[in-house]
Amino acid sequence: MMYTWVKNIKDLCLWLLPLFVLLITSCENDLNKVKEISSNEVGTIVEPTTGVDIIMSDSARVQLHLTAPLLLTYQTKKPYRVAPKGIKIIFYDKQTQKESGNIIADTGILREDQKLYEFHKNVVATNAKGETYKSDELFWNAATKKVYSHKIVEVTMNGGNVMNGDDFESDDKFLHPTLRNSKGVFHVDENATQ
Image (cartoon, rainbow, N blue to C red; front, side, top):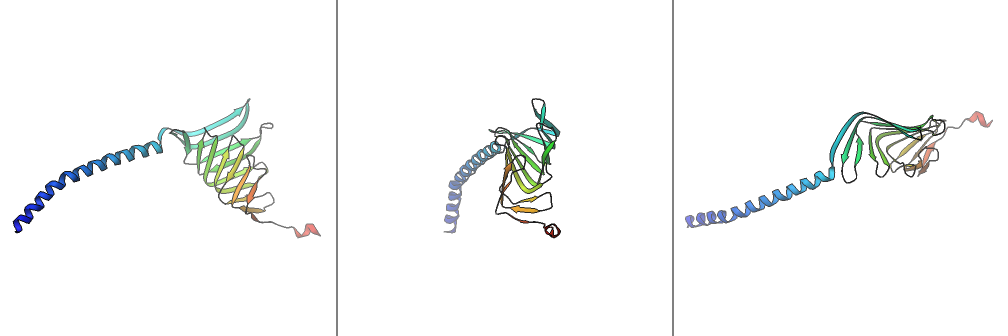
């Protein structure tokens, strides 16, 4: 009786072995397909560029100056560039050619087809008046000439007044900001009212 049971297990194993082999090979094919799809999604680095220093001008007038220690170009359906080790953009006034503001961040993403620039982590933007805007993210749409953020923004004004908001939008010169759910600390000179 014991011998018959062992014999049946051997037969069962012989029948199940091809089934397991079929399952394992079909899993490998699916896994290869997943790897192929994910590699297409992520993109491939076309060219790393170090010591990036770009000046953009229009009619021989400097509009902006971009610097980054490293710029990686990714080739996907919509190519984009990433500055993973920091980025700085200085804006210039078209008429006076003086600096009108700047943006500094730990990471930058340039989506040139959409004219959209993303800044992430330790973003600090400064306008011509010396006011600073700090956030963990900032978007600059060069087509609409708007900057915005959907994360908390801290604005430090000239006199030392500080405002915070949950949402932020402004023109790309940071001169007409709008903050949602804003609150702030304002310094009042008591001697000025006497």
